[in-house]
Amino acid sequence: MFEDATFWWFVAPGLLLGLYAQARIKSNYVRYSRVGTSGGIAGAQVARALLDAQGLQRVRIESTPGMLSDHYDPQSKTLRLSPEVYYTPSLSAAGVAAHETGHALQDAAGYLPLKARSVIVPAVQLSAKIAPWLFIAGVLLGANSLAWAGVILFGAQTLFTLITLPVEFDASSRAQQLLVSEGIIRGEQQVVGVEKVLGAAAWTYVAGAVSSLGSFLYVAYIVYSMVRRNE
Image (cartoon, rainbow, N blue to C red; front, side, top):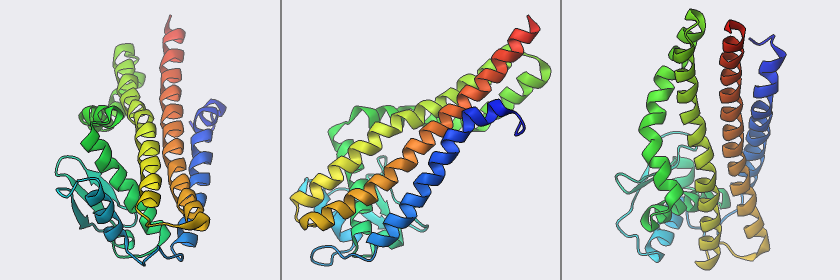
């Protein structure tokens, strides 16, 4: 497979974008983790201030283990922040905390892409477990319907990454607006810093979507070629 030039045509763009995204995150997150917020408030305090300002006092904030493991849980209405974000009074921490707060605001407002993403989560979890096996079994056995079933399930994962894009970009937009309106970041330098942190994070979702789309197109190409050979 790795010697197949077609494989690299489909997969290489996602890999290259992923490397680019990781480089941007590393450089920007580290750089602005050394720049403090106005008033020296940590990520957890940033999130609490933004949530309370929007009337979301019911949303809890917790510290969760792991590096950049930050996420919002719409089921329990809980915003979970990694220790590096929860306890740190930096622009990087403020940007990440505000971004996750943006997801809580989306949930409260019934933001359609977020709801759609939540709906397809069970299908994505199922497809991650059985799609590769269906695809491999279909190819090895020459069973077209089985192989196409695997491709369709791979498509569910790709759809999830594509729906994720507007969800994440909107959360970052909300985050930046809230940080400025609530006076947590002030001045052009701090605004630019948060923009760079959030922008770098956004590239990881773009890379994930491109990579998933490339993988989906590649397995579809394999099955299509198999069907054509058997005609």
